[in-house]
Amino acid sequence: MNNYHYIVAFLPVLVKGTENKSFSLANTKAQIKAQCSDKDNRLIDLLCRIFDGSKLDINFYKDASKSASRFIRLYSKLDLQIRNFNVASAANRIYSQDKANELISKYQVIAEDNLYGDYIEPTDWETELQSADIQLLHSIFAEEDIVAKEKKLDEFKWNKITDFSVSDFFNIDEILAFLAKGYIVDRWLKLDAEKGKHLFRKLVNEIRGTFDKNKLIYTIDENNG
Image (tube, rainbow, N blue to C red; front, top):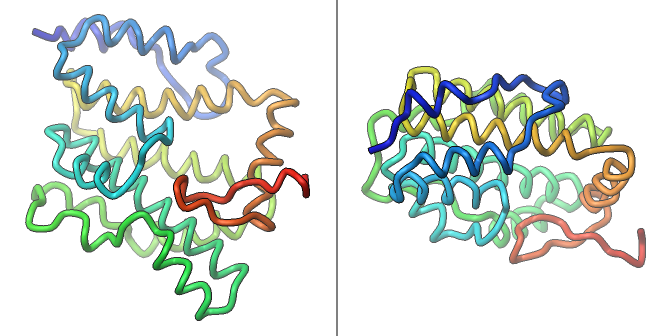
């Protein structure tokens, strides 16, 4: 049986940005998994796949939408929405309307109205993006400063994680929400000056890259820098 109270008690307090200098995602995740059941570790591994970006296809999102974990259902849907929004935003910015619509239809992960099918938990309706969320995402993806855009997008995700987990206390969803924020913190702690340059090169493809059907993001043309 999981001792959620014990696990939550040793979790560090995370804040946005790079103030968590001593935080180690790898060590903290290992400590958490050592205290969890096999069932909960499978949930942790499922959440980690979202942040690792591996094998995020239609089947993944459909499976995640039926997860026993409410947090995974909510966050995986948010991740799907953001990825599809990114595809649409980039296509509309670069191409004509007809070409953009063609690319959006081809490269979005999955149409959101096809995600749940006949299955949906009553509490999962909160995953629907509100008009304020959509306006904010439009402004984020229109941001010309690429690093600023990434920080604003992570702040948007951070706030959504807080909203999704506000009622969770001493359960696996509270721990999953912590790990989701941990991934965001870990990402920015690793962005020293050199890695910041690499991030810029990786993300500049949004302006001059090509679609990668497998990753559903833009890929860098190394010949163009």
